[in-house]
Image (cartoon, rainbow, N blue to C red; front, side, top):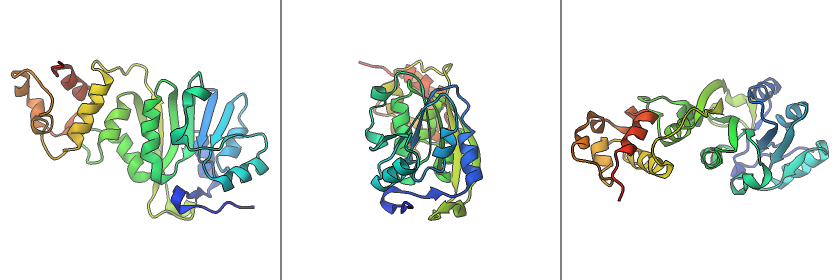
Length: 253
């Protein structure tokens, strides 16, 4: 039995065992809880099952894959549901590592879900569309630097590990893929309220061609602070700490 990759689910099954092995061995944390998203036919799963003393589970929305996994890995704990709808706190009380060859069509949503659960998810090792992986790891001043870059880097360290060519998948995607490791950095703390920080970052990047003086007009600042040269910059030029600094000067009624 084989599973047919479904375009609607963004499935591209990795067929290179060496790449699969390298992804699994990119896990660095001591977390006992490991959750794999979208295992497909288990190319990563089998290597994870070899590891001892883990609370290892997979989440899979594709019914055909669930049947395949039950048949080939009967010991495997499977959540037959949509990861984006999962309540992670119901299943985990301690830190969890998330791993996967993530479906391209929901990769950004997966990362926003990680942010919502940042107190639980302390590590992510995954394969993304190369553009998404580069965007997440991008530094200020780079064209790829955006909302996801800033929000994730406010709490996590990001490492771009390696690139995977199109011909390593069935069916081959139209673009290359990139593997990254995202690690919670407990030393990273915002001085500003998190909802305000997110709002400022999203507002600025939604008008990324404008300087901050124009894009952040909906927020109130003291008149003398508005003369700060930081307001003559565009959002992609600012570091996480500079966005945080701006937020501390917003007048909240």
